[in-house]
Image (tube, rainbow, N blue to C red; front, side, top):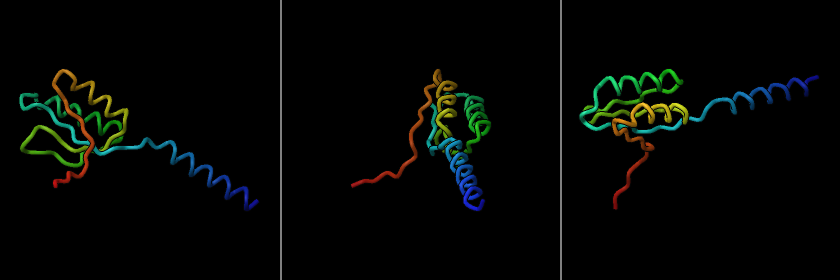
Amino acid sequence: MKFTLSFLLLALFAALCLAAAPQKQVIISYPEDTPQYILDQAKAEIIKAGGMVEHEFSLIKGFVAKLSTKAMETVQALGSSNGVLIEEDQTVHTT
């Protein structure tokens, strides 16, 4: 009985881990002439999909977000006519 309960709990935990969509941290930027409502729409879609906006830039039109692949595809489609650029957030090294 004890073994069965442990096994069921382990199976439930594994299923929950696999069900959660993996998220990536990315930088999303737009050309300077992009209307603000486009950025607002993209941020709303990210939040609606369970992601989060981590940081908003003031010098460029863009932000850092943690989002799923599906949300990334939605943002890409919304900004395709505005030249959206989505790149993985990573450390830059110089030599």
